[in-house]
Image (cartoon, rainbow, N blue to C red):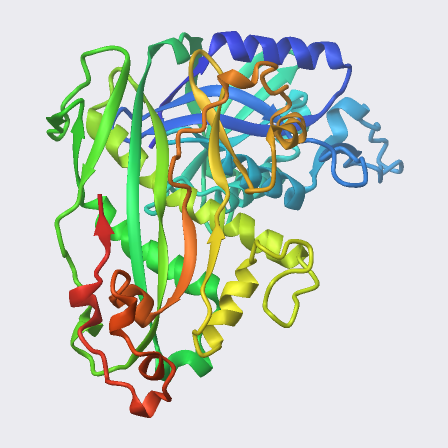
Length: 467
């Protein structure tokens, strides 16, 4: 459980100045930072206000909680400052958290919410605040084995002071789930150490003839495979600057550290390798993922490795979420399975349709590429661009989601991923004999299923390849 929270004084003082000069009496936003189970500490890097919703309305407002006053008993009406409570558009705040979490790198997460309200209003709104914290936690999970707590930072304007509470994510929320933390400000960002990893992957998934009529959606298949890969990646050994990482070993050197992940060859081979199912196609999910992670100087290097691994998986999931969101907006798929808007760029729906066909066609879908933008004190945050998008679209993302302007100098934006993750669907023979196409007769490749040889032990030949 987090007992002590340290906030970056430079950023928090700027946030307090902004709030005090705004003239508003209520604001809600996200707390960006890091939680360490080993140190039992939380580190707050910055506060990001939740923007107005699509209708231009603020995400929170004050209402009078004591409109009915018992005049017969001579009770006096309370002042609006004492009787007000906070109303929060929880759905909008959680959506903001979901989108911001995509833009954060290893070890930096949405770790709670903050509110700018008076002391009495805070006391009248504890249940609402706890429910919002829980919604943010569900929209922006920290890891696969998620923490059961988040932070609630209260900036009180009357009297002016900062307090922080640990909010338990219990199913039945009560005010007792808020526990005070020791909160202080100091130099946090300047002590962070940087870790960088370029991770290459190549997942080859079989498409079985008997499953083609009842195949799940392509997104479900890929999300399941990423979950399987995450379990294997969790057990991978790590090299930092060429040295094998030992558990609880501290990092004593400065500068950016190079991380390499080592996965056992052919570990946990798929049990379906021994089945007698006929393979009619191959779904290839491959590419490279660049990951950054940041570590407090008192944390062991093993935490940086764990952050890198989680960041790789979260990055793959974020890209799939983005193209699924884009697929929902795409219209006008032609009879050839290619969108009318771009005859060379298939969508996720296009690739899914080709799986249901006799697999005589091939298609490749490029996933969004990950770029890195300078943030605070030498750290980076990220964003994702579709193949047809340029840096110009970043401006709206950063202004709306992070309340910051993107860098004016485009040369400071990093694009380290040389092999952007892609998804392709191929016939079995295109993968089995790529260098010897003449060795596969066209009559055999296009023959009915009952006349083709039954190909088994697929994973023994085409298991995942990792570099």
